[in-house]
Length: 124
Image (cartoon, rainbow, N blue to C red; front, side, top):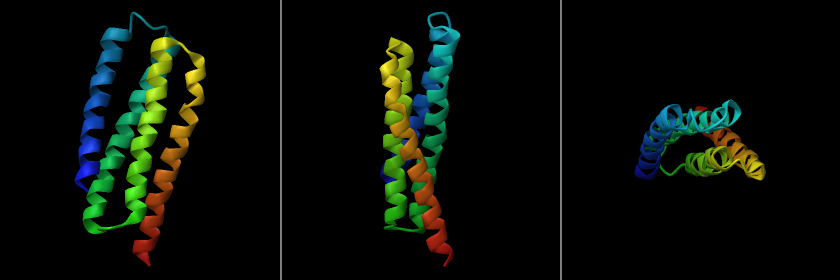
């Protein structure tokens, strides 16, 4: 539980810091497309930081839930692959880095599906 709370808090902090960096430091350096790519990374990182915190809270109610633990790890690795690849792509303009992004997106989807599995199991 504490691990996901910590990862959520760190990623929440980083998403705010990186968003501010993009708005103030990159606005003049990147074209509109690449700035939008960077901002997409920030948005998904912030969203899944909150998902990590939700996993931490839910683990308090469902201790030992493997579905929740796997969901948390999927969200965390998804942030690294999805947002990280978008940050790297926008800063380097190496387009092949965009090939990594869908793997992070799939992990986000798996994480949300695992939350649904936990909801289904707890309702029965």
